[in-house]
Length: 204
Image (cartoon, rainbow, N blue to C red; front, side, top):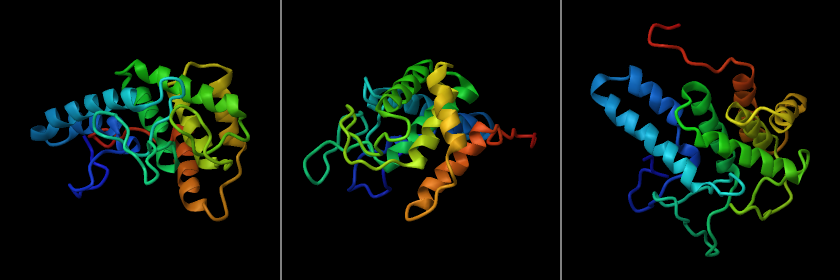
């Protein structure tokens, strides 16, 4: 399982670093000696993502222990859902779209899209506790964009369509946070336009 940082004196992992879609690719087309490792890593990450997210919200913490239990922040509170966490839903949803190996990913996408949409599509906060308490009033195009990609795994319907429309209608991010929000916007546009796709070992 991927570590938060390489330093062993800082323990734990970050849900947004878990990329089972790519581990699956490497398990199929990477060096033969490594394929079993990457296949196992993909399954471990799929299971971790299902365990670490809020059961009512689909929100994941920015950092946690390897068993999914909370790591406390400087104030002694469990690490919240914040900017690092925004991309987690797109990670499990691309995995579902490419490989369809974990049906739990549909429930995860339904939860996070449903939770955020109930807050108001144009005003949901960008930081929460994993059980859904807002931690501020910011609203980010980056979170909206990444959650639109969650529609790859979500149940088709008005909620997933609203996120896709919201991404389409969102202006290119600018201002102070344009780097991170802008990259999530760019990658999400590529995903939703069908331009972020597998290139197989033959280059096709």
